[in-house]
Structures are given as C-alpha cells and as structure tokens.
Length: 257
Image (cartoon, rainbow, N blue to C red; front, side, top):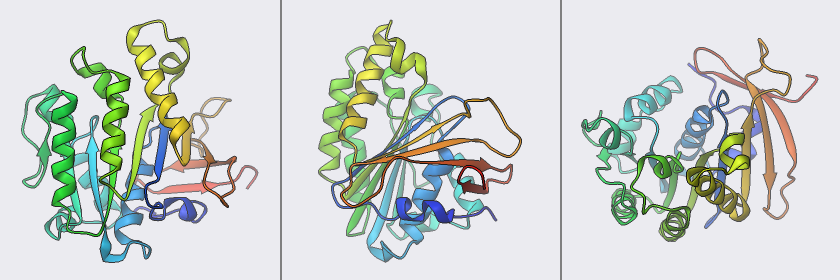
C-alpha cells in the first residue's frame, strides 16, 4: 500500500482554513497527481475534517479510473465515500475529448465547455455532498483554455473560480507552470494561461510548486517542491525534494538527508 502522507507535508495537507485558496503548480515531468491524491486522503481520512468534510474533485486531464486506482493504492475507497455523500467526481475529460461516458456509475460528466455550464455542473456536485465542510479540488482548470470555445478567457475562469469558492469551505486548484505557458506569452493561449496562473497565484493563501531538478533527472529524486505561504503564522519559502516510486508511494525529504 502506498505511503499515505509524508510527515513533512502533514501540516500543509490538513483540512484547509475556511475560504482559503491553495494552488498546486506543476511542469512536464513533475506532475501534481500524487499531491492531489494525498490532499483527498488527508481531508477524507484526517482527524481535522472527521465526518464533516467532503470533497468534490473536478479533473480536466484524468478520468475517474485514474483517481479511483490511485486512491485505492492508499487504502481509500472513493466509491464508498461517494455512497456516503463525502466524495463526488466530475469528469471534465471524457465528455470533451472522446465523447464517452463516465467510468463510474456515480460520476458526473461535463458535456460543455461553456463557463456557465461548467459552473452549474460543479455547483450541483457541491450540492450533492452531505457534509458541513465542502472542499473543491479542480485539477488542471487551465486545460479549459485549450479545449474550450474561443469565448472562454482567463477572466471568465477567474470569475467562475471566485463564485465557486463562495460555495465551498476551501478550494484547491492545480495549474501547469511550464515556462512556455507562463513566460513566453507569444500566443493568445499562452497569454491567457499566464494571466490565469499568475492571477490565482497572487490570490492564493498557499502555493505548492513542483518542478524537475535543475541538474536533470536522478535515480532517487523525482522533483523539487517549493512551498510559499501567505497564511499568518505559517513559515513559507520551504523547499523539499520528493520521490514517487513505481507503486505510488512517496517520500519527501530535505536536501542533504
């Protein structure tokens, strides 16, 4: 069974404060999948939330099977959590790319990329949770800029995020932060992506950034995590190394250890 929560990350993966925004950024080769799974596990299984915390996971890059299998390796049955009103999955991938149905009976599938339709579907998913505290996790919301119609802009997505945050206890977003998308800004898509990423980073209470090693790849290191925080009393500017094993287990450690 995969290691659940690395000790160094326990303070950061606990149930987020009310009205908070947590941003996870990743680059090609340093995915945030494992981090999202551990947020889900911590919220649903952790002592902070108890039975009063639930999760809506919206993913625009990965289907329900991916998340179900990943959670299963950690000993978390998200189908059972769904049956008890503590977890809802919204598939933002299958309906947009392949037109196929969801991979689970209880999953919601987004059929439209219109901002109003996306917001309505996510809002209904939040309404399905039977918990006092509702945490919204949106995986790769920036993908909407690439797969949606031309009228979807960073400004509209930011407004949608703000509206959804008002209906959730806290919100966790994942975004790509690859250099061409954030720094070059030569195309309309790159400019819109940069505006979305920078805007959310500016408003986030905590940012966990994943990147590759500056020296390239290493046998026992998958990447680098940098944590910055605007939360009062929380120390920011921390940087750790992490290793994701083939079985899904994760180790997080400081440099030189």
